[in-house]
Each structure stands twice: as C-alpha cells, then as structure tokens.
Length: 216
Ligand code: PMT
Image 1 (cartoon, rainbow, N blue to C red):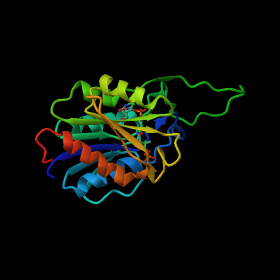
Image 2 (image 1 turned 180 degrees about the vertical axis):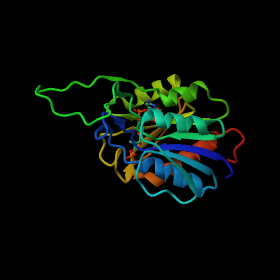
Image 3 (image 1 turned 180 degrees about the horizontal axis):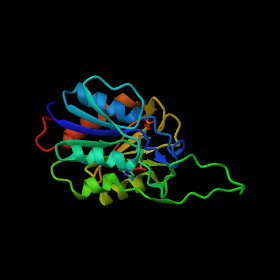
C-alpha cells in the first residue's frame, strides 16, 4: 500500500521491415496479473507493456513495441520505483538493418537477416539499483534453477521468478503458471500450478517478507 510498483509485460517486437518483425510467444498475461495484484493492494502501478490486453483499472499503462522502446520507458520510471517486476519477454537480438520498405521476395531461395544484441534492460537496472526491490524472471526450457541462480548474481536481483516454459500449464499464453521463487540467500519457494493472478499474489507476499521496513 502506497508503494510505487513498475511492471513490464508482453513480448517485444523487433522490426525487420514495416510489415514484419521478430517476436516471441508472450501474451502479457503474467505481467498484467502482477499489475492487477499490485493495484489491488494499494500500490501506484506503472505497467510498461507490448501486449494488446485491456488496461487493468487504476494502472498507468505505457505501451511500447521494441526492446529499445521498453528500455527507455523502464528507465524513465525506474528511479521513482520501490518494487520492479520484469515479466516481459525481451528480445536479446534485433535486426541490424530495418528496411524502410517491405522486403520483396528475391530470386534466391534463402534470405539472411543479420541480428545484433539488444540492451539487457534487467542487467542495466541491476547495475544502477539504489533502494528498488528488483524482481526478474527466468524463462527456460532446461536447467531452470541453474540459469535462474546465474541471473540473480549477474543481474543483482533481489528475487527471481523461474518458470519452465515447456511445462504443461506454464509459461506463454496460459491462464496458469508453475513457478519457483529463488532468492540471493539461496532460499527457494516452489509453487504448484496456479492461476497467474494467484502466482502474482504469492509473488507480492514473498516481496513483502523481504522488503526492508515493509509491514510483514
Ligand atoms: O506473458 P505470458 O504469455 O503470460 O507468459 C509469461 C512469461 C513466460 C513471458 C513470463 O512468465 C516470463 O517468464 N517472463 C520472462 C521472459 C524472459 O524474457 O525471460 P528471460 O530468461 O529470457 O529473461 C530474463 C529476465 O531478463 C526477464 O526478467 C526479462 O524481462 C529480462 N530481460 C531479458 C532480455 C533483455 N534483453 N532484457 C531484459 O530485461
């Protein structure tokens, strides 16, 4: 209650030309559920989203498309945030060249698109973290806990929500998710398959347990 929460949701879209993009399977449901859970508890919520889902009541939604646009919007709200939850699926790469006209089929059978690294927004937030409580996600298909632990250290996180996106009932587009909360002190909480809103509520319960000076 009274805290400022910054949430990201949805998959970024990295333009190839005015017609095509490179995207991913994120629907935004996890991030929107997190924003709803936060506003229901009395937080001031900014949701930076690529998704076309209806804006949750009482949430300040900032629509973006690409990783770079998401980065700008997140950085603009970061200093004022108390809690940051990065549920968005951010493309690690984007096409080096964005054609300003639709690329026409050529005679060759194959077409090569060169990609270059996008900024790692979460890593940048971790490197400039002050008093924010920083929650990242890990979307993996294997070695879930190992990769999640690596991200906690590499990105200076206070908590990570790890999900195996190949598990039935978990990950992209589903109404439910199956997550593990991992923390820098090595502790871990495993949840069963729950509706994404229930996962979001458990997420904030865990955050409040660890937020300095928060009412337990
Ligand atoms: O949106 P839904 O359909 O409901 O699906 C939910 C979800 C599967 C997208 C969600 O639960 C989830 O796992 N979100 C994170 C997806 C992701 O990009 O995970 P990652 O392991 O690739 O990235 C790790 C973390 O770094 C994430 O917090 C991500 O936001 C962040 N990141 C990644 C790359 C990048 N360039 N910048 C980032 O900030």
